[in-house]
Length: 477
Ligand SMILES: Cc1cc2nc3c(=O)[nH]c(=O)nc-3n(C[C@H](O)[C@H](O)[C@H](O)COP(=O)(O)OP(=O)(O)OC[C@H]3O[C@@H](n4cnc5c(N)ncnc54)[C@H](O)[C@@H]3O)c2cc1C
Image 1 (tube, protein in one colour):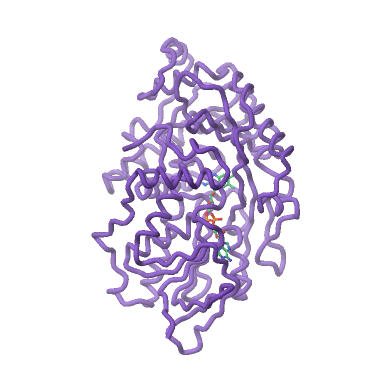
Image 2 (cartoon, rainbow, N blue to C red):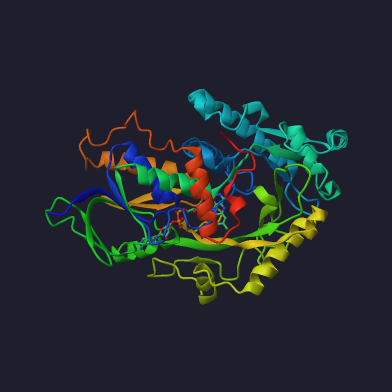
């Protein structure tokens, strides 16, 4: 008789990979299918949303959830976290009020204190009272005199470095420095891949697309699902659909109804002249989808910067947000977007959109005008369950017995979703209590830094990005 796996996971993005790692920690064996050649190769991420400060429009509750989930993910993947802060500002032309940002930050400090009281190991964003610092005109005038520090180690030094480059006249005051860190996807992918290779509980099938699923729950056999690939059939008891923006395809093959939005977006890689000292990630808020949407500059090693501009000629696209139509579970993009998803970008479009992004940032950082295209775009489609395009926290749903559908919006939700699925598996009594137990000696997430460095570097190159983008600007031992 062929093997029966307790868990079958379809899709090895951040959600599926974390699901496999977390279930191994609970002693649950799994098989993970990923159609590409490495895990975590879906849409990009660069920002740990530990407070949701890039989204002035979302609820306080979503901000608290993002903070909590981000802390959990940072503890799991410490070598992927770049501990440089984020500068948050509102241009004078924009409707947002600095008071709203400030009130929310105060709320987040209190929430962070509660998380630390619950578990002291949650203190990974620094001391709660230093979670953010606001700067008024007087502070800024004094700080500018401080000049540039090559490797800043205080919030004031980060701010002073920023001040040497930005046009503060364009911004409402106060401006803020917040402890929302960078998040390196090559390093997370490397750690996940190495941990999966090292562990014995998960069988990883790369370059292996799932083409169909058969529901055998009523057939009085020991398994519930049969998963078909081109060459073989696999039997599993519990099914996890973590196919990213393609979750609807699995639902369709199971004849389940659901609705969702899918959104295609892209960020751009630019190269700038060497600057005298490190800078935080820079955020200049603006109304999403308008020509002055948010500008975001994310520093990487080697003078590379990732750029987002929440306008239709930079990060967002005509036809880029699509929702399920009547009788259609999986929304479809138009052919121009589908072409980009499969990597077929016109070189001229990469140039134009990267230049547009440089232009947007240069409004606030005038010398950034000299930056040039530094690599291919970082792009992908993501899913948003339901019909609210402003939703930013992850969702898991259990539409049917022994079936979970993960639809995370931000990478930070992956661990929460995995834990919810494990709780559901326990609740369903599918496995005996002995089969689902946290292993206190579970160590395989402890992958040596040099191995992560090596694989992250190889992944960046293999995917066509500059190798320095696989390193942290604030390196860790
Ligand atoms: C431009 C952009 C910037 C972003 N920035 C951030 C950020 O800064 N911070 C943040 O937290 N989030 C960010 N996100 C969101 C983040 O990228 C997603 O939330 C996250 O990657 C989703 O992970 P996932 O595992 O659910 O899906 P995916 O990463 O899409 O993984 C799904 C996987 O399933 C595989 N698959 C699909 N169908 C099959 C099949 N039939 N058989 C086998 N394999 C299959 C796919 O190949 C894919 O690898 C950003 C998204 C975009 C588009």
